[in-house]
Length: 175
Image 1 (cartoon, helix red, strand yellow):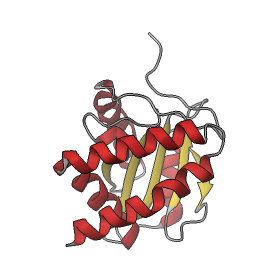
Image 2 (spheres, rainbow, N blue to C red):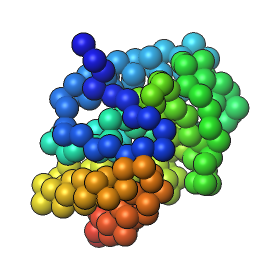
Image 3 (cartoon, rainbow, N blue to C red):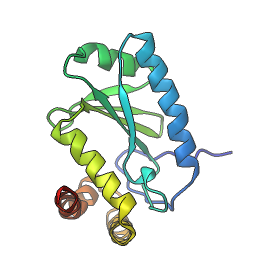
């Protein structure tokens, strides 16, 4: 069976929701948890992004938010995630977030941040708001599919096209 995940670099493709994404997250949760435990590190893992919202179309890449305590040594946590087969890519323009990817074409992303940081909180607010508001999730789904059709080879334009919507959702979630 072909994997329901995989997206070539610098491309944008949005596919219909796949219920296997939840199972793939559960398996990856176990892999990452085991790697962290082997290194004596505690991580909080959350399934984020569109693959974490039932019914929502998504790029076929599973996003995982990995939370570390402020006491956890950053280098040791980075090494533990790398030991699980992830390629460390640095902050990539988001201060306070360490980014990793796995798979060729890419299938998994890990976003490492301090638990309770602004990045951590915003990721969970956005996911949870979409899960709780079907109308907003449908509007986001439509926006993503439109942008993917418009910018199939321009990830930056795709991301920039979503930014205002994402900010508005996070503001609404904050109340």
